[in-house]
Length: 314
Image (spheres, rainbow, N blue to C red):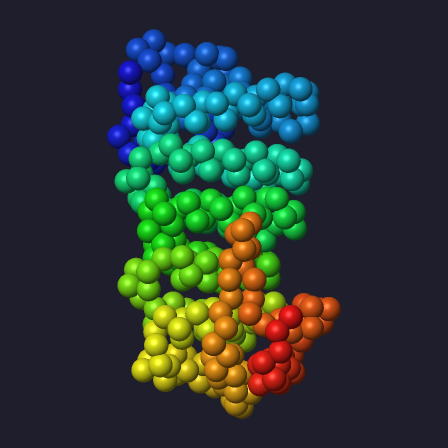
């Protein structure tokens, strides 16, 4: 049996569109139902799942078979050499407009995180993160909650610091505002659940600072809550270093002191955000929840400053 030694496609892999096949001593046509894609998946299953307009019953059965194959520990060693191609394939399912299809794809990725060896997860953490970011801002709560749980699993299997670094790289500049907000929320989750010593806190603060002036107010609010957690972890002696990032982004945004005032007001409020039983971040303070996504930075800062000065909690 020929098996690739790495997780990237190798010259000897037999192509199947965007996919490839591991075959035995006797060559098996890629179109044959007996051919294995990604080392473990029959080509018939891949063909069915690649055609979302096909028979619904056959598609459902193929999905069930896919999950069973991925969750079988005996298949892991055969899948590992083709992990990049397989996740690319699952990513196509993840992009499906039908949320049920997306949820299945999320479940498959969750199964991978549970069954793959730790060293493989560590080596491919960026691949997992960038793929999952596609659904981090999903409008369907079930999909978004499932994705959040996988990120938490990744933090436990690999390291919270590596997941946070990959998340910030992929999510903070994402064109979808909800992805940007949920990225910051996941940073908060990491900081709340893992020792501060696991992170380079000042690096995270500098990275997240740009989100304090995001064009969407929910992202700005998430960033203020994140800064509150960072301030608590760093301690009073390093607050000035935290505020230096605020001054820099404020200057980049045209100057003024409104943002500095808002951040200081939030840091003076010692109540921190919490993670509820479903994994969702609950902020310590909320502005008018019906204020909409858009709000200019100056107005937002004045509102947030006033709210925290009064110590009003919702």
